Amino acid sequence: MALDAERIRKDFPILESVYNGKKLVYLDNAATTQKPRQVIDRISEYYRTYNANIHRGMYAISVKATEEYVRSKEMAAKFINAGSYREIIYTRNTTESLNVLALALGEKLSRGDTVLISTMEHHSNIVPWQMLARRKGIALEYVDVAEDKSSLDMEGLKAKLERKPKIVSMTMASNVLGTVNDAKAITRLAHGAGATVILDGAQHVPHMRTDVKELGCDFLAFSSHKMLGPSGIGVLYGKEELLESMEPVLGGGDMIRSVDFQSSTWNELPWKFEAGTSNIEGGIGFGAAIEYLNGIGMDNVKAHEDELTAYALKRFSEIKGMKVHGLKGDRFGERIGVMSFSIDGAHPHDIAQVFDSEGIAIRAGHHCAMPLVTSVLNEDSVARMSFYVYNGKEDIDKVVDAVRKVKAVLKIKD
Ligand code: PMP
Image (cartoon, rainbow, N blue to C red; front, side, top):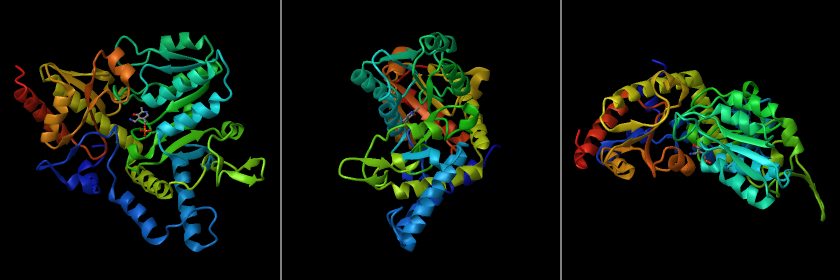
């Protein structure tokens, strides 16, 4: 067993709660994850014992708050093998990180330049580029999903790279299909074509080891709330020399070195990109989440999700009329524990509602990836379950029972 989910579960107070008369089975981890006591306590300790603004205070609790905030950035840097905390900018979430990049890098683009993304992207890696395209007259191009409706069309990527896009921004793992893209190959090919490479790590960093040096990417975006940490904290990693060469997007306190009536100079990294009072408790709580995941080990997290994915695929294959999207068979290891599915004759919202009556939290809809769901999967909406460190095989057994209940309630024949 890769990890002891039973023991881990005890660290999560919410998993003790009763939901519709049943103990909560939480399977919406791709949307957000639950928080262990260690994270909740770290945030509470900050508010109870050293709440103060950071950076400017000449008194003990402000110094401690600053130290803890910086320490969390050092942990985040180490977690993804960045050079130093100077390369770790805290934003609100992955979405904000990608928007900051579209604004800051977009400034340097001109009419006719191309940005290349894929049809597998979350809206947060589509809409900011559409907005940029409208503002600056640049072209937005897409790499398709391959015929298997699961993986990225790497030949299509090579063909699109021949047009020399200035920016290539791709997801490392799909929040609908669960597919883990070969981000290292994407980065190598895109760099070969002269592009700046941005990786959306929202569904990768929480689920498997992520090493920016090994990947070679220029930027990486991810969110604390999807990896046991608090909401309101996202990471924008960037190579130091690139961040140095970029203009900040937001202006105000903290991000400056000096200000006169006409102009200002910028603070050093990473503060140049963090205007105003930070989400201090969020940063500190995120540090506790990273410590927690380090305690488990990211290779164990991935192995655990592989085990659950293989088990779920096997159990679901026994159910008539249930279709699981994404890679299957011996390619199950090329996915994270995110599984979208459809059941013949059942609307995904009805599925989610019946699951809810059984205390099982899943999600139904387009999962903020409308182009993928409607054009690639040809569905209006799909049901999605997603695993994390506290889920076990018994949760999947409960899902199988709930699917039977869906069929019974909707009078779907076996
Ligand atoms: N990218 C992917 C692949 C995601 O799954 C998500 C969240 N569902 C995001 C980006 C956006 O993350 P956030 O809402 O934290 O900004």
